[in-house]
View 1 (cartoon, chains in turn yellow, red):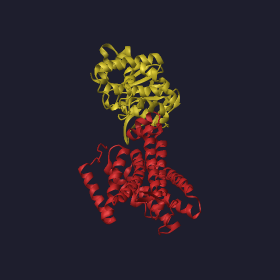
View 2 (cartoon, rainbow over the protein chains, first blue to last red):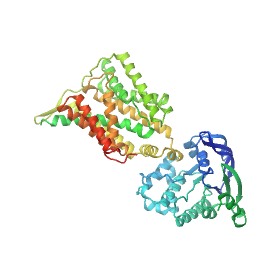
View 3 (cartoon, rainbow over the protein chains, first blue to last red):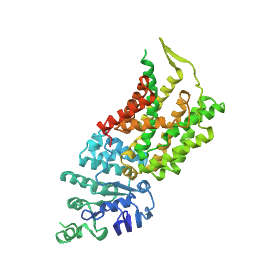
View 4 (cartoon, rainbow over the protein chains, first blue to last red):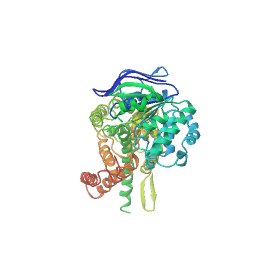
Length: 233
Length: 283
């Protein structure tokens, strides 16, 4: 379980995230939704340690993370799929995956057969450079790379951005399957309503860096009233 | 046969230059540190040989000690200075420039400003037909080729290299995968400095060892990186060959100073016409 307790952070003097509290329950998929510029990516970067936290606590299974460096947080069990994928374009698929194992433990390479089962395309293109992949394929690689580190929780930052709708659906279904099979906890930052509805158990809404409301997927309200309110759709 | 000797001399200069530029490039490519003191680390490698020679230690012991001592010095510099200014290139120029002055003056205080000479451990010549060349210089070239090859292997073929290249390309992403970027920076900096120390020790018997010798390699080293472009390693090879080859060959016909001016003009032309270096593609 990931608990964010009264987090404040931002860039320099600009506070983007203010007194934000939220919990991603173990074994569940929590979607964090909000319009552009509301602080979603900033929040995930703060959780990963890529941005300094001004105040508040980040607890992963009750262990505080906020004083750790990004690589220590990764080793504690945070798996991160950044916005824009950020795969290593000049590395092959195999090298991208090996790198993730090097960061955590080379023993994690035993997961490869499992990874190939989830994402067969990676096995077919092991020697291909990641830079030649389409956006969707890069997204799959970025997810696989994070999974190799055997995270307790996977943080996904807008995985559907710039990806064809058909592939978005494939990725959503596959991630739901993985979460079900392995009990992986997922915190998904997303604006794509279809993906959220396909995957999420819980939905939290962020506005101007503040936590507004959290509900079960079923409780979105008649005609998705909450989505209309917080996403203006 | 008249051209063979200058060609081999040029090759020998190129190899040493590439060795020095590789150290500079590793440190710059990975950490954004422009290390103006790199030439002084090279010089200290040569002075380790001076000390070993006067202590009567065997030449090979000096060759082992030089990279060790300079590597340790590199570790110290990283811990006390460099790690505070990672990824701030302008600050690193100022800080390492200051460091280079301090190191140079330190050497002047201990050894005096005059130049020292190191006796070559091997005085035989290699003779093929009517051409002969000092065996020691040939061995230095071989050693340089091995070291350059070893560095390429380390960075292109090993897990350490995979992580280092990942940190060069996307430091934050590498860190979020659990890679300790700070530790990689530190090891790479030490590898870069140890290489400079070993290069200094290797060439010490073939040049005059003095406190100013570092600059003579530092500037062509930087030029090689600029002129080469593309991918940290291949660019250094091409740039080092262009800068070192031109410099060394031109001195056959014109004075060393004129040769240097010519090389600078050529470098400016290359950078003007191909801002991304000969190989292109540098970010």
